[in-house]
Length: 166
Image (cartoon, rainbow, N blue to C red; front, side, top):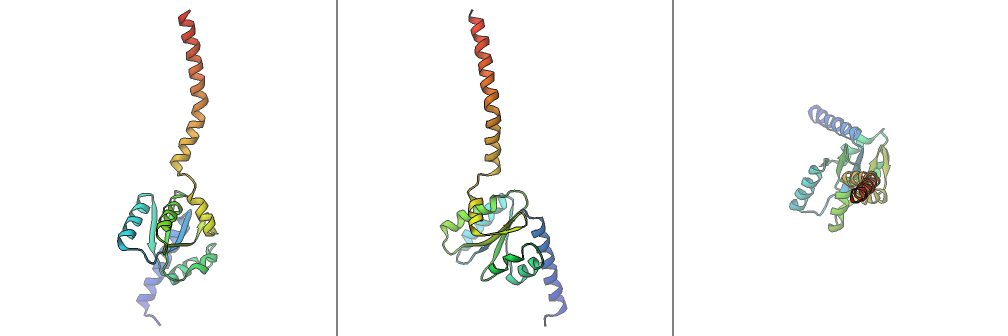
């Protein structure tokens, strides 16, 4: 039986983890074995720059944090080495970065994840990874709105130029 101080510390860790999971809109659980410290450092830097919180977690602590929540179905993936990436704003960043990293590191595997309080499989995470970034989507929408206005402005300018020639 662990002593009271250790038990209290673990309960605090579970509470902090539960709070992070509650705030996140998307999460990706990975098996990080077989990567070098240098690769891990680069991965963490890229995730951090994109607003993704990535950290190693003990399976038992994560299991306690997801018990009795909508994420309880993720417990099947809590074996071996486990790290989790959580994002509070960008739906695609964690999936995109981790999927790209997994392609070049065969031992690094995506186990499962969640999206808007629903547990998803690796196929859904792969599909999410292929979506364009928020900035690209916004630029596409802006261009779609701007194109008819620009065409109208060119047509009006052509009319004005034609009248000035006459």
